[in-house]
Image (cartoon, rainbow, N blue to C red; front, top):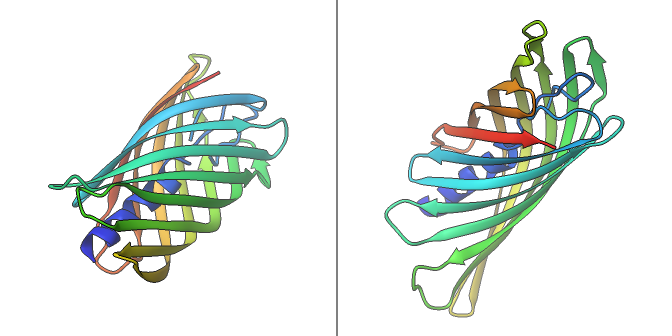
Length: 218
């Protein structure tokens, strides 16, 4: 089903795209915000692909040490229809390499999504889970003492998607395992960070997904 494929792609985009992060000082440059150790951040984002788009938000905390925790919410809207899907996601990352301005983190994530608007289709219910893991790398390039920094970031994950569709008491369950490759550029200035990202999955005939982010550190 085309709608289901589009939904999976956008859900994965928010899963990964909103993880894009970079650090400040001792922060984890492998991850998409300018938070340092012991700091939190809040960001808004939007992902766009052929046939759907998804606004979302994310709350993260960079612990005193190698661990970072992230929680986010997204709302996927299918073009030319009233169908919409909501999704919540939790992610853990651990910085295992930090050398000068280079950072590497393995990540693991788990998410749940459901049909938020059935567009008037009676007895229709859709829900599913998405989980997986992979790795991300980042570099922090600073501009003297100006407070400005430029952070390129790359990542790859392997994800498993399992969905159930129920109509009139009959249910069908399907699953798919696929890879996702993504990159981003983050610009930071003091407590504010923003930038674009792009993702491509190995799902057959998948279109690229573009992500825009804006966040603040607290």
